[in-house]
Image (tube, rainbow, N blue to C red):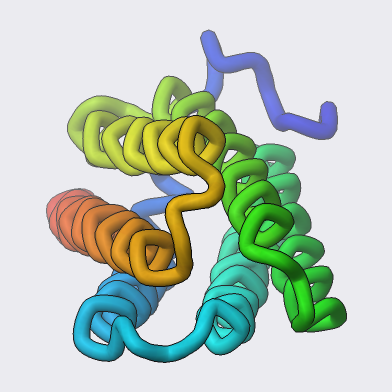
Amino acid sequence: MSFFGSPPDFDFSLSSTLARNWTVVVARGVLGLVIGLIAFLFPGPTLLSLVGLFAVFLIIDGILATVAAVRAASKNERWGFLTFEGIAGIVAGILAMAMPGLTVFVFVGLLAAWALVSGALELRAAFNLEKDHGRWWLALGGIISIVFGVVLVAAPMFGALVVTWWVGAYATFFGATLLVLGFKLRARKLDSGA
């Protein structure tokens, strides 16, 4: 078996893997919504607090993606892209926590890099997912991540409040797309009787 699993022409296992693990997708969506609400309801905290909060989000999200990858690997299914996404999130979160005095520019750059990498991996994974398992919702989540990263690269020094709003908007929209995807996967799992 290769690192990324069987060739895409012969393998629809990503769909069944995600359907079996729909609760992990929903948990990631709920986490995104909670982070988004906190960012909107409490915009006054300093960027340093936001760095710590988002670092926790990155680590938890990375762990959940890694859990999904381990589950997929145990069933000889695709696991490479989920592993990369999980490791990228964990590393970005640890770096942000280890250096709490990061400037706005460095934090925004780190956040932009994570959003671009994560979005590209999600978009790639969407093309391995069957349409009726929520392909377009996963693709939308990837596109939202990429747009968020591009916006951060284009205007890195807007200030802590604007970054707070961007993080809030991103986490809310991304969380919502993962929730819809998770419940669509749950419905497919129930339909298949798995």
